[in-house]
Length: 291
Image 1 (tube, rainbow, N blue to C red):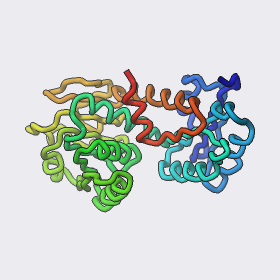
Image 2 (image 1 turned 45 degrees about the vertical axis):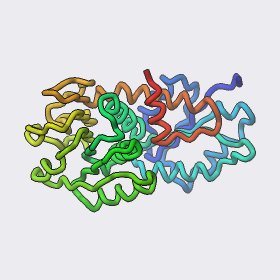
Image 3 (image 1 turned 60 degrees about the vertical axis):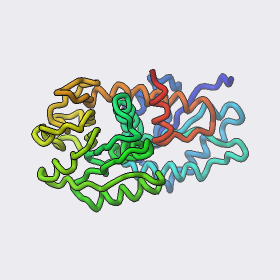
Image 4 (image 1 turned 180 degrees about the vertical axis):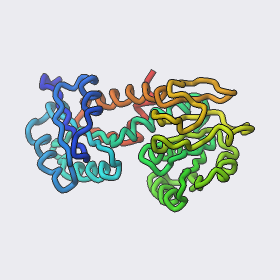
């Protein structure tokens, strides 16, 4: 085992690197965090080379890269560029984690919570805010589990684009674009659903309580909005497997504790080898291993 200190190189696509991500890294035991903001595919090469050419052999497992920022698409582009400039055939590689906007760790925690109560391989799910960063990741994980997943959005064309992207990642995915542009759409959207995850923007009530009144199929509700009002009316942020009128409910804080554990577990995983790439599926697998 190398005695070199652990170094996490934080590549953030925002002008100011996330303090949240840096604090989590330190609390996870990383000894040094090098933070860079405004990272783009065009300026990432010297940062990658600084990681892989300064240490060698077993010591490279003590350096890792975290790609973050508020824009998931921008993070994905940076991750793709980083991978191009590693040289794994000569052992010149470091482990990578993508978690822009907390999308991977949050989605993994939410889907893990749902899977504790229903069989995701047969469930019918609806993800409200399904075109957003967390929503897309949740859809992808649910689709990979095998169930039918509705991608809820006020703009059906955007939901259809997400369905196409998910199908490219998950062959034979059972995904469907669902319009939720008005309250009149709610009863049809909820018909037969066993799970609803609200992953929309803060401040928007995506599912008023009256629209699920009388629904007998919903078994689990998960609201990922931690800022009042709740995305799913009637759920409280601390809810964690709380039974409300016969439905198991999770609020943002109830999921958030697991999200933090998943985030820390992913950080630890980075330093086990120098060739891991942790995207949403890998992060979800870590979530499933948590006690």
